Amino acid sequence: MTQGLIYAVIAIGSVLIGGLITFFIQKTVISRRVRNAQREAERLLEEAKTTHKEMLLEAKEEAIKVKGEAEADNRERRLELQRLEKRLAQKEENLERKSEATERREHSVAQRETEAQEVRSQLDELRQRQIQHLELISGMTTAEAKSELLKEIEGEIREDASRKVREIEAQMREEADQKAREILSTAMQRCASEVVSETTISVVPLPSDEMKGRLIGREGRNIRAMEHATGVDLIIDDTPETVTLSSFDPMRREVARIALERLIQDGRIHPARIEEMVEKARKEVEETIMAEGEQAAYKAGVHGLHPELLKLLGRLKYRTSYGQNVLLHSIEVAQLSSMLASEVGADVDVAVKAGLLHDIGKAVDQQVEGPHALIGANIVRQWDRSPKVVQAIAEHHGEAGTTSVEGFIVSVADALSGARPGARRESLEHYLKRLEALESIANSFPGVEKSFAIQAGREIRIMVKPSEIDDLEALRLARDIVKRVEETLAYPGQIKVIVIRETRAVEYAK
Picture 1 (cartoon, rainbow, N blue to C red):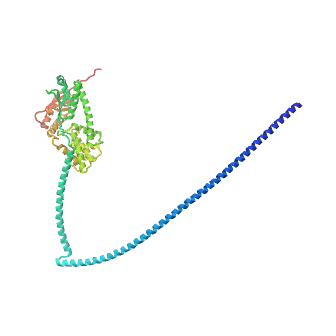
Picture 2: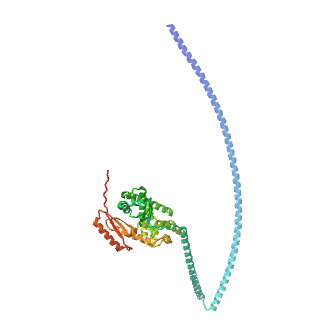
Picture 3: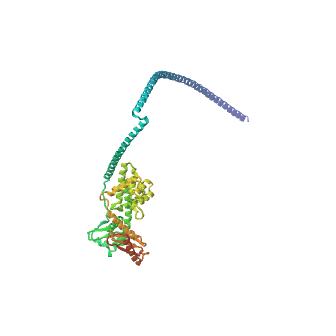
């Protein structure tokens, strides 16, 4: 028991001794750290004092520098103020000198005015004495003398003025005539284009004379189908390797020419194929019409036209006026209008557009009643927002009363284009009008599907609707048309009227 207690006391003592040793060691370490921290704080404090001194020195130096600059600036300003004061003093001296000189001049002017007033008074007295003396000599008062003098002067002035006015009028008339001739000759020379006369026939070459028999077909069925589909007269005669297409309507003739050339290349010639080719040719001609309208607008320098106007403009390619192609005529009128408008100072854009579209009414005048100028103006009014262009188109033939400058210009350009030697043939126009009237008479009867004037107007072929016209009615229709033609048209020789009634039965094998 005693030994265990001893061990316990020893253990406790060892623990206490270890704890004391540990305490003294930690105390020593802490003391060392405290001393190090004190030394570091003293060092930082010294550095801070040193930095503070340096900053104070820099601040003093900066303040001294700013003070020096301010003093230098003040010195410069004082010098500048001294210079300004000297200049002001000099100006004041100059103003004083000028003021003194002005006063001297005013005094001198006042003296001269006084002298001039005295001289005027003396002159007035002298004038009055002279007037009294003249009145005594002439026996008239001043008012009577003035009236008499004014009458004489007025008569002389009127005579001189009348003579001068007559001279000016004669000179202006001569100059205006000369200027007009110069403008017209210049425009005509600048627009020197060839004259192309339209004809009523087209010639299609054949690869051989054997093709003529194939075009005629068995018992003439092919040539009849071609004439029926196109309204064009096919003339197959002894001329080697050629077929002549005759029609007064250039559009029909062009459709027939294209279809015939395609049939010759294809080699398959029969009524169904003919109708197919004619339909394709019509579509191609429609595309050509649009392209021709766009090309005409480009040549004339007119942009932004509505597609409907371009289409109607292209249709003029297949229209003639006294043998002159209307589309080429319209382009020429647009060019002449542009030149004339630029010469006289008018609106060039309005004149060019009106010149190009002035005959557009001829594209539809067969379907619409009235003068083509007014028809064209109504058409353009629908698709163009320029009232000046519409007015110029309506006025170019005088139906609406020519009032605008552009209307006069288009009228003059139209006359220039048509009046050139060889530009038009009146007999052809009359001939075409007779053919158109012949077809119009036939189309006016009920039951008529379409009609074609062929053989130079000596024959008209009329296709009727079989559902509306029977065989007996076809005979009666032919007699009625003959009577109407005899009553309304004047023509040489005789006109053959053929009424065709055709019934087709079509079935398809499947």
